[in-house]
Length: 202
Image 1 (cartoon, rainbow, N blue to C red):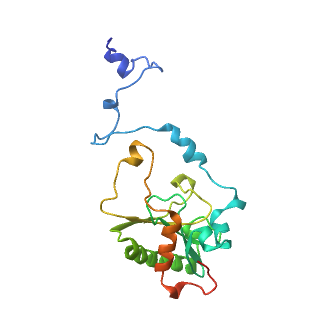
Image 2: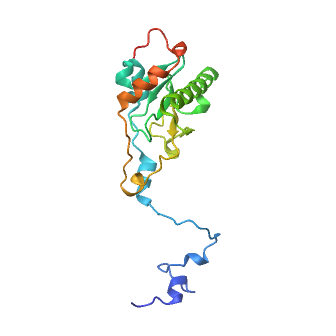
Image 3: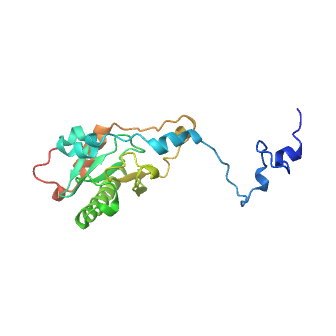
């Protein structure tokens, strides 16, 4: 194998535009992390898979029956439903009924109820699934990775001490052991009846 001369690795003094440089000469602090460069993901990051504004699933869901929409609870300003593409069984979303994109656009009443429903969801998930912890958060805007960027939604992902596996890494697959309908029914049945409107169906 032919070695590449050091001067070609560093670039020539004449400013050769085609020359490359060694990473050791860049301004950086070495660390223990390996880097996996995936420029192809910029297509998703920049364009995403955003629905047409008239087809917002979080605006459509409340008009459907709870079972079809995977809704587990309805409040006055917000509601809770299962994520159709869950990270874990019981992955919930808390959404305001109103079509607003970011948290700063929500009213104080919406913010308060999103928080209240999040707390209740945590208690119910702990009760029905014996989870050990949660990931809770919001992706705000396309650039932050929001799957539906135009309608605010908070993720509640239950976690278990032994739920880590290599499936998502080596096979691009997430193992979900339970059907969405079964999980929805279990969570809805465990939801405190005091927060269920009388007209809501399950």
